[in-house]
Image (cartoon, rainbow, N blue to C red; front, side, top):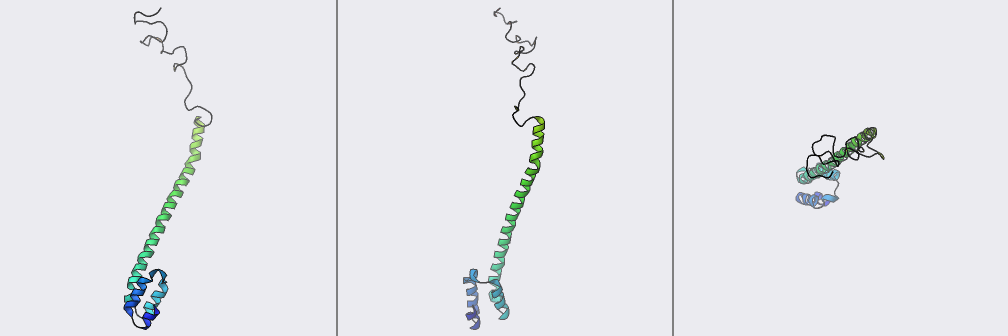
Length: 136
């Protein structure tokens, strides 16, 4: 780079900036451009540098936003988790207790398995009322 500056090869200075982009330090390029009045020739490098830095900042912002979002979701789950467990425990829905209650009155398993008296459909396994030809 210094060779092209000393020999007043400004176009080659630009070519060198383009070719060696990843190896050059931005502060050195800006210093040479300022000292030797090469801003016009360093401008493509400066534009590319600004674009790359903007891209990197946007990438870091996205990652930070995603991490913050995950942390918020985890905090919300942590806050709601114990409270919901207490509600389930209070309702008897956790532990060794069954989720559904056992058979209650008229829910099967008892003497009124076919329904209560006068249900209209025969009243269970008892006498076959109203269907004719039943077993007595």
